[in-house]
Image 1 (cartoon, rainbow, N blue to C red):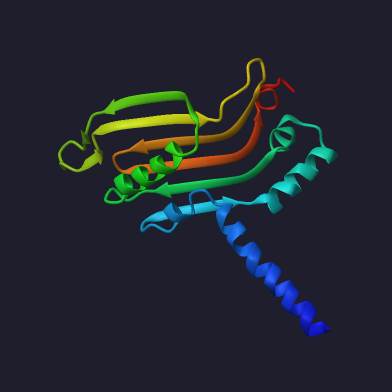
Image 2 (cartoon, one colour):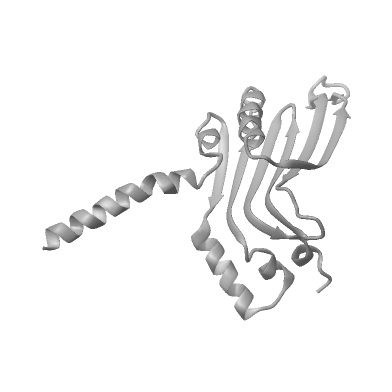
Length: 171
């Protein structure tokens, strides 16, 4: 009997493993060379949701409907383009809107006398994507913040419902 119960538990565990892997939208990007990644899953966010019951502040309220957070970072000039391209393909498949986009042309800066480049030239861009918001509702489903320069790339993906009124309230 114990053997059968163990087999059933093992089967449930094995069948749930692909679901856990699907939780991470940017899992393949996280495996790329020169990429650092952080995944904050539901378990730790449940602790934060529990904090809302203890203290009623806007920061605790703002995470109450967030399911997961993923962070992707690449600081290798050689890998930035490939990482950005892989992330963009995933973003394009997610049916998100561009909420904000800012571009800045940076000039190359060279340290006088040494000729050492202290800032690469090129375009630096920041884009915030979000799920469509219903008319008159301050809630957004999913948000992605991307920052990219010629030698760096960062992405933060917040999966869940973000209530803008909780984030910007004055308390």
